[in-house]
Length: 622
Image (cartoon, rainbow, N blue to C red):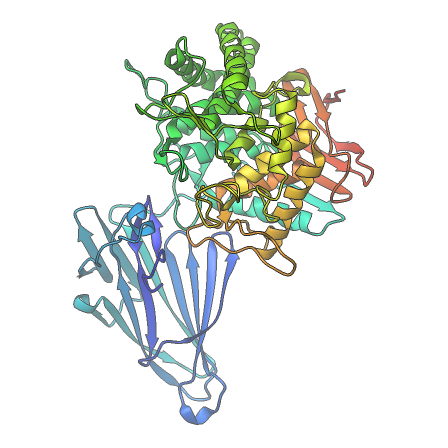
């Protein structure tokens, strides 16, 4: 870590360490390898020659193992034939800058250090951080940010130094990891395509590594948004990831919903019932959007679908009041308006928000009816009004057949730019008996959207671009202006397959699989949307998280889309709608979970699905 760019260790959106450089006998080790050893661990190896007379071969190996919890273990291995006394210096520094300033290139200067305990401490108006070392250094120089040791290594011996960085007053992250209490099933995949088991296994490994316990209620777990930049709870991302990971069981969804229910705003006022969330960038053509709105709409939808996957009646009842408050907020906010508008005055009416609101209304109504609560009819009535208005106001006719508008400006003008957010229009949600909820687009409009998403303008060959390549402001590295976002690509694949557009779904699926192979099957949340060419590889995004909760869960959704599992645990049925073209040949999944029991399924090369293991009494639907 040199402090350049985005390098550093982050906690809660702040960089608590930006520099950690090593010098041995006055020299930097020669870097020979850097790789991710696991989803939450990285390994760096350097070498040194301690004697110029020894020839070209190094005789000291410096191994750095860095963990996502802020621990780094530096080990010095000697292959010298004589004892060595190595002067070791570790240079540390931090600016304690927030992530937004760093990403914008305005981090600010380093904060002066002070000697503290067995290490160094930094303090400024925005926060504090410290690094402790074991064994304690023989010397600590605050003005230079240096810790020094004199390490004695016998021939063939090793010595280690361990550094621990954390904000003042913060204990270690309460990670779940691979403990037996993990809410995720240890499922496995196999198939003709070797990338299927590799991506599926790595996706589950990443999800396991990102699991965190709620500090106040350790029985509840949620996913950190991603490492290294977002090692904390992002409500909308946590809900999206839990929803895509439902084939691995409902435990993660239940824990995430309970945690977020405790953050829900109550009392009087227009925000009552909302799940709070920060604003995020929405690309070059729209102002930042409120992720709290998205989270509030995702909450009842996730609860409804988790119930279909087998969430118990008691857990559903416990979470139902929070879901009702979300739905009440929706109905109160829209009043007589056909659209759900952004909470910030002057903001546009977004296409993506209407898709979330429509799904929440229909799945929420289904949930309320199933649990004997009132309000379902009013939600369905408003959803019908929204559908009618949306098909009229949000569709832009052109010579190619038309496209959905990204938004409508406050004066009613459509914002015509085509982006990956349109994929949310295909994500309608799961109702009872394996049926999908109706969408905001009619059949003809859905067909046109499918063709657009499958065209070279949107399909980069590595996945779905965040903004069409011909749109003004396209940037292949743009966070929402052209970069491939794995989450939206997975939603597009699932939505296209469900709507019967398997050619377009297959192209996007194969593109992400090729990208996953290039990334060692550990997908970042985004990467550059450059056009794929023969012999090329996807370009990493410097600000991407890897692993990331949404991309890891997207790996689960992408591959289980091949089977098309649509459970209705309360009714005791599961319906399978596999991709008939079997684009990856034969695939099989074991250890998935429906109704709290293992579920195993296989799809043949002919596109025929067969259940191999299921809960007692679970019947195959039509």
